[in-house]
Length: 313
Ligand code: UDP
Ligand code: MG
Image 1: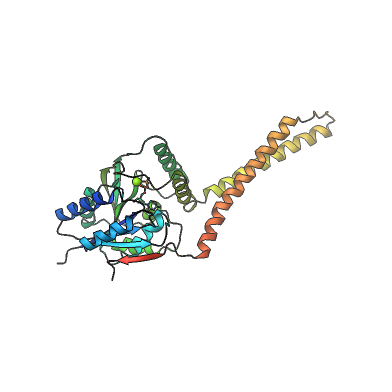
Image 2: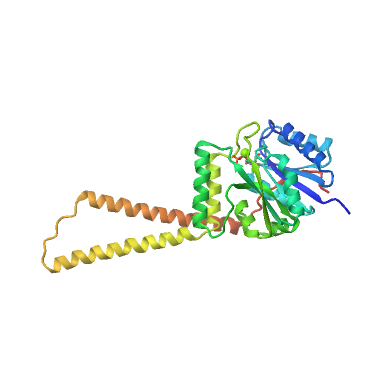
């Protein structure tokens, strides 16, 4: 029997400080599981440092490594997509970060879980390395997402996990260009298993995903999986309109009954105008979020452009 072919898909953006350790630890993990035919698809997401060159050198040393270099920085989701679309030939694909926050030593457990019949294996963090504001942000997002979206996305999961060949094929068939990986992975279905692990600190270097980028990612997650914000606006509008109607009626009736109307003060007017203006702007913003996504999808632009391939036929 041929050994199962398992590929790791690892996007990397300016990761020179961690690459040597990443390569060493991956190689050690592979040595411990010789019953698997391993491959590594490293995606260079338009790094400005020597990331691409270092990966290319590693491909020279070890033919199990492959490089997919993108023409510029397209962002983590696009890089991940590029890797998955180049991994159709493998029996299973492990997705992970390059910065060693997802420890390579967990990979054999993911593979074992897949061999035991899971189509999707989720690496679930037992602990979170993030602290402070980032952690509050992550928690808040999960709370909000859980409330807004019918789909249950597993708490404490990120990119790290394994997809079977069928799951990868299904993911690659998705037509949309805004892809929120954890959500879509849940959407895919397939029998799933969880493997617990301890999330590590970044081995070296700086997180390349700025806070703004994470915020955009969170918005993508919510707006591409839920229409609830639109419905909330409708409800809010109906509520305010009814209130306006009731207040109007109240004044008319009083007038008809001949009761003197007290002048509505400046403060009241300013408050009302600002409040209603704000609500309307929020409404336009929410509409814009959806419209912008529709616009992006309609353009049908490719999500990434590959500049260089090493190790692919
Ligand atoms: N990354 C990428 N493109 C980017 C930013 C990041 O491919 O534009 C990669 C990065 O090299 C790492 C992974 O995405 O392998 C996660 O990035 P990071 O550690 O900065 O994010 P965080 O851990 O804070 O979510
Ligand atoms: Mg990281």
